[in-house]
Length: 272
Image (cartoon, rainbow, N blue to C red; front, side, top):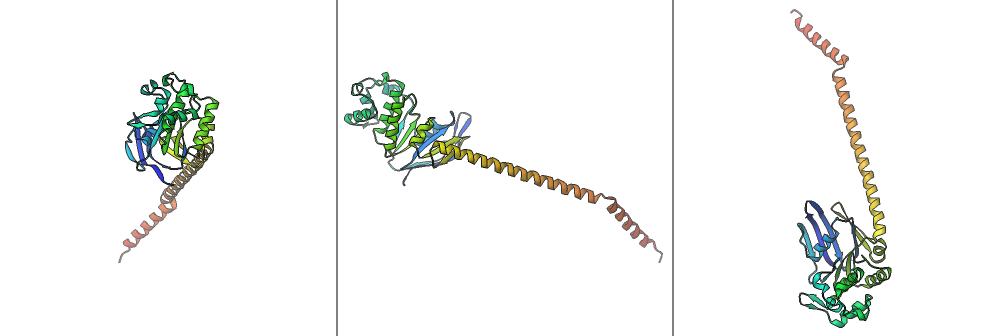
């Protein structure tokens, strides 16, 4: 499969902390990647770097020529909130326009009623705004879709709509979410951000979390074994040092040296 995006040895800081310390990541055209990590671990910042709206402190980020990247934001911006739902999807900005009929068909597919399509985007509930931002992102048919917590404030029925849509989606996507069941339902691989490192697994989140725990346990066993080996070497070195000290100061060796010295002195005093 063709590579859409590649990150090599990427390091990035935020304030006084290191978010990413030399991480590598490759996104192929068929990837359905879940991106997880604790709050503050840098998930949204990593999406910014993929999108190109933020520049890494160091490292290399390369994208396929002409790559179309869509981003589902967490919040509805003021420039969008004053538009109707149809215009919010049709007017993409930067000279990009989506046909109104196509925008309306997409909104209907995502569960909006026809009577809502001319309503103000700013009047939507939190879950409805998420659906609208999702529609904006996929309307331009991006080859790589970046989703930042799209399931927040969604009811079960809307979650199922999103699930069906993503499972039918033909492009690659990177999904940030804390919803384990949703991640397991729509992703094929997982990247876990922890302690400025990125751990990737070719499995959905639940299986990846088990794999990471096994890696941690194996690393702990290896660390304990290494500490035991070092302690054993230190103990052996200490015993050897004590043995050497005892043998150089033993009475037998001291007496032997004195006897040899006396013998040598006596032989020199024999008259000729």
